Length: 280
Ligand code: NAP
Image 1 (spheres, rainbow, N blue to C red):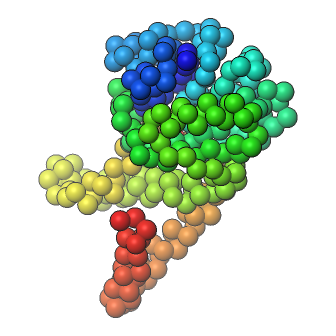
Image 2 (image 1 turned 90 degrees about the horizontal axis):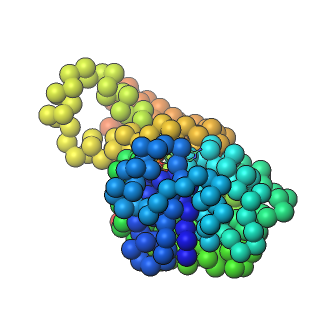
Image 3 (image 1 turned 45 degrees about the horizontal axis):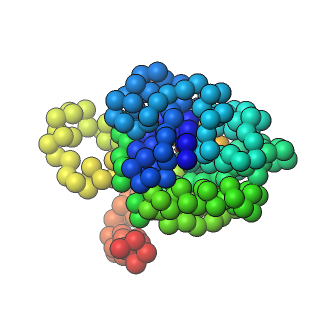
């Protein structure tokens, strides 16, 4: 298979190296807005060669769209205009509803398979790519019944070859559940980092006193705004809903502290501990 990856950053670059190493791809072509990223990707052997968007789409069996989700809104209809019935397009974006609404009714809609590999780190760019990033993680296929059976089969084989488990959701459910389990935790982490930066002006003290607890809760705050702002823009309503609940929870802790109600505090922490039954 010739695989063209558009957006050769953390996720695109990790897929490039993974698909080459596991034999799914015989040739990996990179397309990117950044010439520097393409050079880095070639140096790190994430891709075999670089091409323009038009060339990369024309020669590919499989096209992987791995840019931030705002760029996908523009790129996907353009790519659908160019593909033939033997080619498959998959994406890896973190939001789906807006993009899928945009291509409803397109003549080549069924060549596209909407996918969300639920794997990543807080780092971005080709220098952050990892060959084992996807192993053992979940990949959600969204509105899969709207894809041609052979395209769906290609997408499934691609992500399975990377060691992923597969599940299915429709576009609304995908964006709602991702707001609950992924997008809110990033906002909470960004807010926590800003809180500590605001209160503790001594950077050396943050470094010296931050235990692993602080490090793990603010890890996500290192994530790139180029990737996250488009996600919050596209999933605004679901994120607002869960953010209201989060503010309510913080405010309950605040009230208990003001009242010196430490029994109430104990009870709330015990309830929070129940997350351990789900995430061991
Ligand atoms: P990333 O490391 O920043 O990589 C994105 C790459 O796309 C960059 O090289 C960027 O170049 C390039 N790019 C931007 N606009 C482009 C355009 N119009 N045409 C061609 N290339 C373009 O981001 P990432 O973390 O890999 O995320 C990529 C996608 O995966 C996003 O849609 C994200 O929602 C999804 N995703 C991410 C994670 C995660 O944890 N990171 C997990 C699952 C899914 P520049 O650097 O020059 O902008």
